[in-house]
Length: 132
Image (cartoon, rainbow, N blue to C red; front, side):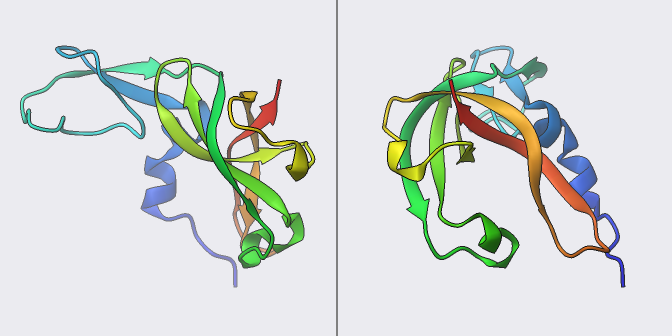
């Protein structure tokens, strides 16, 4: 039986597909994923911003025994990447040998297939990082 799209998938599209964040107009703090309320300020106003398409690896781990949706990708690297905007996010590093991953390595984000539940389901897309 085919799985239907959940409300969460549709709500997350701007950040998942286009790396859209929001910026507190008072403090200049950038939040990714976007927030509805700023910490400590219920009246904060936000503007939508496009995150930079590149950054550097802050830390990483190598996944050798992967969960089911990613089993065919193992071994692969997951990293915390700091964008040029100062936002840190977790993503998969791809198109490289896992032994070549290093802290401080420059990367850029690309739109890629993340996973699918099965051949009759929705294909989930999002961002992954590749070495520059």
